Image (cartoon, rainbow, N blue to C red; front, side, top):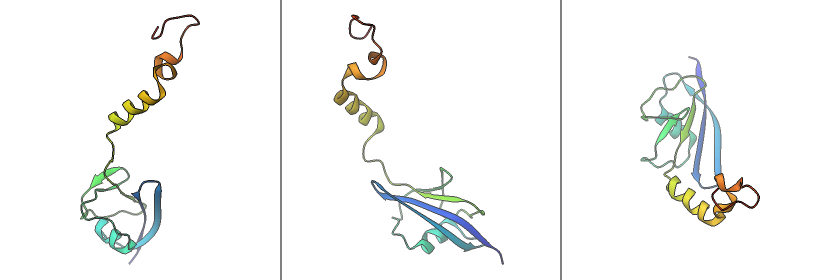
Length: 106
């Protein structure tokens, strides 16, 4: 019986990215791939194939890229506001391209 070749990627901690090529029997599921990897992926962690979240019972196809996601620690909107506050209004966005001698924001 032919084997599936898939790629398993995970970022279980900030700044750490793991990637592993796996060969699995035909008809294997995403859960089988996680078990075969030996990585400690939490049972409630969402996983996906090529960026789409799928159930762990999903059958794999040859060449699939399995991705394990971790929860966001900061809301992206909040992070942007904090970054804007640190950088200041004059160095970002519309305010960076100001006419010489013009008022702030114009």
